[in-house]
Image 1: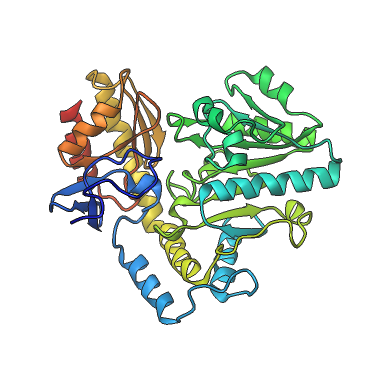
Image 2: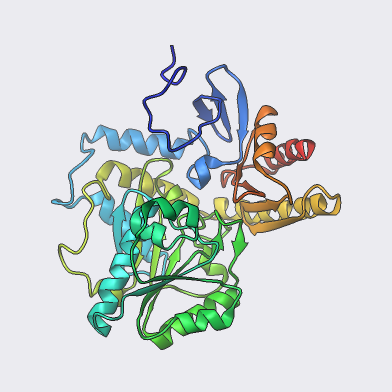
Amino acid sequence: MSALATTSPLLGVYRPPSPVLVSGHGTRVVDSGGREYLDFTSGIAVNALGHGHPTVVEAARSALATGLLHTSNLFRTEPAAALAEWLVDRSFGDRVFFCNSGAEAVEGALKFARRWATTVGGPERNGIVAFKGGFHGRTMGALSATDRPAYQAPFAPLVSRVQIVDPGDPHAVARAIGPETAAVIVEPIQAEGGVHEMGADFLAGLRELCDDAGAALVFDEVQTGLGRTGLLWGHEWSGVAPDLMALAKPLAGGLPMGAVVLAEHIADAIQPGDHASTFGGGPFVATVALAVCEKIGSAEILENVRRADAWLRERCAGLVERGRIVEARGRGLLWGLELGRPAAPVVDAARARGLLVCTAGQEVLRLLPPLNTSLAELEEGVALLEEVL
């Protein structure tokens, strides 16, 4: 009997729907009953190359063959150094810290920003500014900067000196960022919050306000980073560079890994013992991650995402014109479809027809196909979704 067939010993923090998934290949997953589904969730943007991609499989086999799966942070390894070099060479950053998840990456980024800010500006420069609609994780620091009162309430009091501001109110944003601000954290596209793009002008304004105030600008690219928008980093569309960037989801192709990329001036303030991760950057995960990053960063994959963007932009506009949805928002292969009604029943109905999608708030469907999804597969998935709508 399946371990999930009866009452499960797994902690009930999720409400897992049937089916029980047992295998995957490309854009498809298969449940324990043998039924196949087209997967437009990608494990919530994690499986950027789909399921069972040869790049991931071969890298994992190669790493396993060394017998060196874990060393702790007491020792250095070549895979972690090579991955850090790849990330630095292709970003604004100069140093990298590895961890295990997006929430940990956000925690690390906020800690590093506060360490730097209090070092150069004094102990009173410790405030953090975040934005309405933002989602940064569920650990205590990340949750404190996440605009979800219902998620926060059971765990109050949270980390102090965090202010959440409406991004649509420029005067409130300007007032919030001042001499006591250590960091401003923002997603280039608020994915969990309904797929709202922050926009180049807004991000440029934040950069200017942070520079004037002596604050660090942190981009949470856990979901938008590594090709999801059609460029390697979601912030590249704006031309604005941060001081720190949090990465995770697709980084290691389904294995747990997060990273913080830091500019030199931030990294210079960090001292031995300020932060650590026993598992972060282990040789097995780092080997797979480098192979995944190299594949995602290829012209082939990024061009495919931009092709998909153009196709989805036109196709979703048609859904709006026909009254199937209220609005379509997104970039690359991160799209939110505003329904004007609860999205959960649509998710259930799509799953019943063999399509996996997820939500981004109460009334928004979120589409997160793998970055190598073909236009034919996109047509198949959107056609199924239109039947449901």
